[in-house]
Length: 197
Length: 258
Image 1 (spheres, chains in turn yellow, green):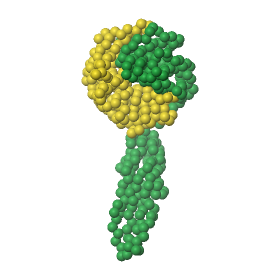
Image 2: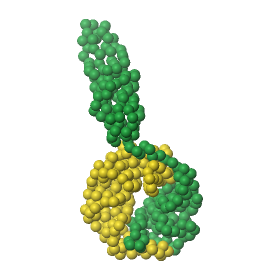
Image 3: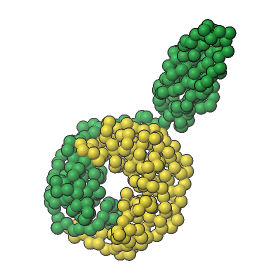
Image 4: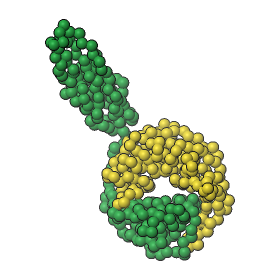
């Protein structure tokens, strides 16, 4: 039996002497973590264990005693996660989708919208820049662009083709540029100019 | 499809094709085939595009074929049994979405094709890849972070969980996206990757986390490096974790790991 997975908080204010200051269990054995983001006093985690997928919210306002605040069962195969404002964005590899959750009440997340991606796009990471979400389409070597200005009704704005067989997996966005890397031999760093400010 | 042939003499009944239609000369019956669409050209357009021609590629098209776009009939120009065109107006292209195109042939026989959709996309069409770089042809890229003018990338040789596993740490100058350059590639001794890894840059430090050992032991290790010197700091400490993220609580930098 797998042991219960944990979330640990490490104080790195002195990088040469990192210290684990707090720890809590996730309440889930063998949790396979897909992604984690910390915003404000909350840590948001997407993962799955034994076929059960969840988005977990931890209160980390007190680093010495983080605790699991809530958990929302979600569809199979959550991958990338990002948080922007009052919304959490989560991709689902096997669902070809980007789902949006309202996190204004961290104790009780609720799904408010979903964007269906093209049938060749199994998404991995997601990064949100303003009102636009960028999704790494691993299976068709592109980056999906989703207009999330209305989180309850996101719309796919198009796909940006990356070099063939680049299979993007992770994304970062900085201003007008979106960066992707690929998790295949000969892995590639690519830069997309979105033309934004 | 079964067609009943009524003729005074079956010997006078000749079968042929005319513009894709099955012609039963002398039988008094022409049965139309069911059309099919293989592709649209263009397959997608940018929202707000000007009026233009849409070419429908497929088979069994007739001079009498009808076409609907988003459920609305459009005038058809017959090119051949495998090509039709319609004209899309600006009002057909003003909104994002996926719009079905269907070709239908009249009776007798005939019928509607399966639908193929024209994608109307937004400004994403104006985004372009302006640069790419491959740090090593024999390494995968597992995780990265962007800080200032540099991308910090962790890679491995794809032999996770084996004795031949190796990891490298790359620093790429991204000041000019069209001409990015790998400014350093450093082998990370003792950092055995198992495909689950994370990297974050904070101040002058790079924080790496990955697995060590074999798939069965599946232990994870975190290591910190100074960016400028890549000098390994005190002995790596081991724990179970699969990702890293930074946050601040007040002014105290915190590292969260799972």
